[in-house]
Image (cartoon, rainbow, N blue to C red; front, side, top):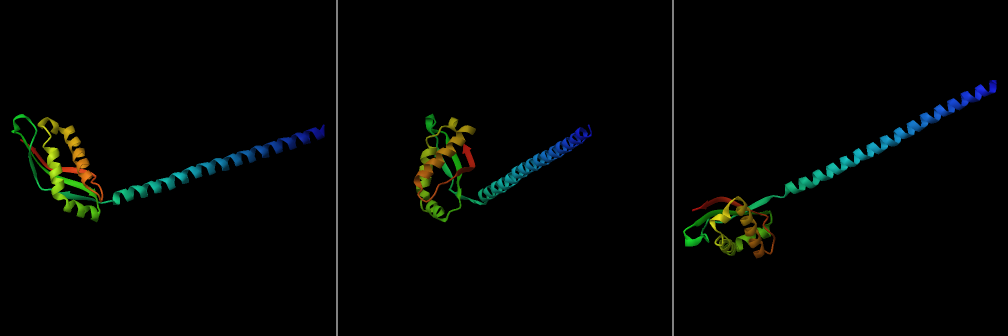
Length: 158
């Protein structure tokens, strides 16, 4: 009987040590997994910030055109549009030179777009569509780059 008690104590002691070792191993594995995830998020966050900073570093330049004064396509031809338009683009010396060189062609193309519009076309949504149409029209004339935005600094419909 004495041997059975001794073996029972050894089995309980070994079982207890095994359970402790398993818990420690699971804790180390879980901690390593958690640390890996946090490190990955930290590295990914830094890369995302670098991409955002590089996007912010791109400087938008404005090319201002003279005032536009055109008749609108309304019946009777008594309505007109007066607007001051600026073209926005990423800073590029070649594109700047091309815009300056083709200023008259660009103005002519924009005038042709504006003259097709009616008063009803120039509501809030229509103005956004007009900006896209002007951008697309001007970009067809350019070889060295593309404009990215069209801005109205003044707009008057009468």
